[in-house]
Figure 1 (cartoon, rainbow, N blue to C red):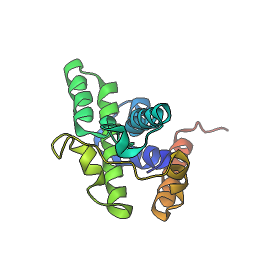
Figure 2 (cartoon, helix red, strand yellow):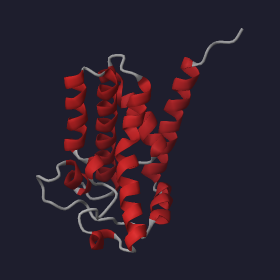
Figure 3 (cartoon, rainbow, N blue to C red):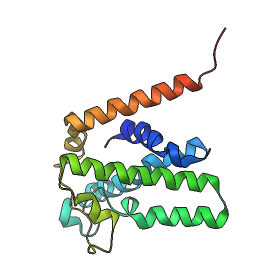
Figure 4 (tube, rainbow, N blue to C red):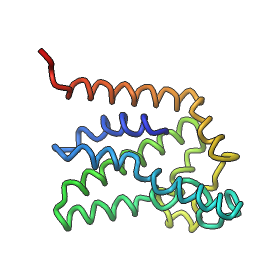
Length: 169
């Protein structure tokens, strides 16, 4: 899934659970796994000139930020600190993971996200990067399911923005 899908669909998915949680950390959470893992992989790949399995543990763009351990750690910190902002962040991360797993069910191998999600229970390795580079990754938005996800996400965000906009006389 891409940013607008994660933001819009993630926001909508979180609604039954958000109980008035702050919106900004929730939206940040919908993107946080990618904000951690994609720069980590692409940075290491650029720095070393290696890709995929040749990088070792950081073999793709779904690593530590895409684990349930990461999301549970944020949720535990939210509980211990009684922080609504951290709870919102954890909820946003949970929607991200759920949407990535759904995407994999539709357009990839169903177990792709599960290797990261349940890391290290399914083995010490993360899923291996399947694109030729970041440009190939971006072009993947042409996949009908991903394109539809971006359109739906953008529509949800637009409707939410319009609903919250002050009414002008």
